[in-house]
Image (cartoon, rainbow over all chains, first blue to last red; front, side, top):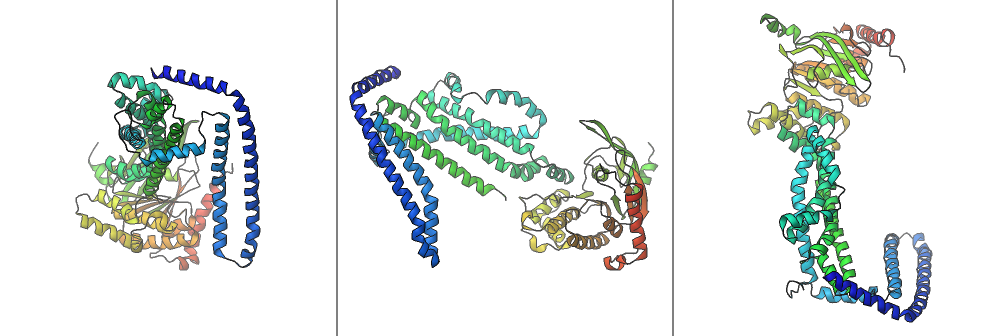
Length: 323
Length: 273
C-alpha cells in the first residue's frame, strides 16, 4: 500500500532531479564556492585559536585566574563545536548537491514550527511529535521493564547455579544474535495486535544484556566472600541480599544501560513496521508525506532522547556504586 | 562404635583432633596429594601455630578444621564432635580480612552476630557488636566502610567479627601477613591480650618465625609438599604474659626461634624451582 506510493513519489523525485541536471552543475559550482568560504572560515578560526595564546601572554605575566579559566574553557569547548560545525558543513554541502535533502537552516525553521505545538491531536494519524515520543517511551518502558523483571532474576539463577547456567547456555547463544525485528511476526501472530507485538520485540531484544551481565557478575563474586558466607553460616536470603546483590549491582547496571540503548534503538524500526502512534511510525508517515525536514528532526530527537536515557541511567548507577 | 571413645575425645586434652587426615586435590595435571597422614591433638585454650614453607598445605589444614573442605581420608573432631562443615564454634580470621566492602565495620560484625545469636533481641545484638568493636579499639570507626580504614584496622575488624561469634576455636589464616612490620607487632601484642582474656583455643597459620614463637604454646612445623606432613612439634614454654622487648634478648626465646629456623632452612629447606 504505502510502499507503492513511496516508489511512485520517489520515482517522480528522481525524474525531477534528472530534469534539473543543468541546475545541478550550477549547484556544484556554488558548492565549490561554499567550500571556499568554508576554508576561509576554517583559516579564520585557526587564526583566532592561534592568536588566543598570544593575547593571553600579558595576562599570564600578571597571573589572572579568570583569563586562565576562560582559556581552558575555550580549549575544552573548541573540539566539540568544531565537530558540530563540520557536521553542519557536510550536511549543507550534501543538501546543495541533492535538492531533495533540506539543509540545516530549513530544518531548523521546520523544527521551531514543529516544537511550537508538540502536543496537538488531530485524530489517530495526526498527532504532535510530543505524543509520538511519549508513546514510544511508554512502549520502551513496558518492554524494558518486563525484560528487567525477567532477565535480572534469571541472570542471578544462571550465575548462581552451574546446572542452570549449562542448561540455558545453548538457548542464549542461539537466540541472542537474532535480529530483533525477526521476532515481530511471532509477536503479531501470538498477540494478534501491533502494540503488544512492538513491546514484545523490545522485551526480547533488551533481555539479553541484562541476563548475561547479571550472570557474569554473580559468577565473579570472589571466593573469599563466599567463604565468609559459609563460615558465618548465612542463609541463602542473606547471601543474596548482603553479598551477591551489592556485588553484582554494578554489573547489573551495565546490563541495564546496554539494554535501554538497544530498546531505544529497536523501537524506531519496530514502530515503522507496526504503525500507530510513535516516533518510528512518525518517521515513516513523514516519509510518505515526503516531509524530509521532519525525518531529519526525528533523527535528532531519537538521538537526544537516547542520550538522555543513557545519562539518567549512568547517574542512577553512580548512586548505587559502593566505592 | 562405642560411646566412650567419643566422650574421651571431648576431654580438654584433645579439644581439636585430627586423625590420619589425607587431602588429595584433583587438578588438571592429575591428582595432587597435598596432605598425608596428619595427626594432631590440640588442648582446650591452647595457642597453636602451624608454620611451613609456602604451598605446604598449612592453609589446607586450617580450611579442613574450619569445615570449608572435607578431607579425602581421615577424621576431624572439635569438642568431641566430627567436623562436617563450618560452624559458629569455629570462627575464621581470613588472610585478606574478607570484609564486605559495601557494609560498615559495624554491619560487617553485626552480620555474624545476628546469625549466631539469632534468639537474642536487637538491643542485645547491638551490645555485642559494640563490645566487639571496643575490644579491638575501633569504636570510633563504627560507621566507616572497609576502604576508608587502614589495613591494620581492617584486620582488627576481621578479628572482632570472629571473636563476636564467641567461638570455642579461633582459626587465623596468616592474619597479619599483609601488614607492615610495625602494625603487625602491634596487632600481635593486642591479640595476645585478647586471647588471654577470652581463653579460647586458637590455631594460627603463619610463615613468620617470630610471630609463631611469640604467640604460641606449641609450634607445629610442616614438611614440604607434595604429601606434606607434620615434621616436628615444638613446645614453647615461655611464661605469659610475654613481652616482645624482654624476649628479644631472652636465651630460651632465641633458642626456640633458632630451632624453628633450623627446621625450615636446614632440614626442610625449600628447593628453589
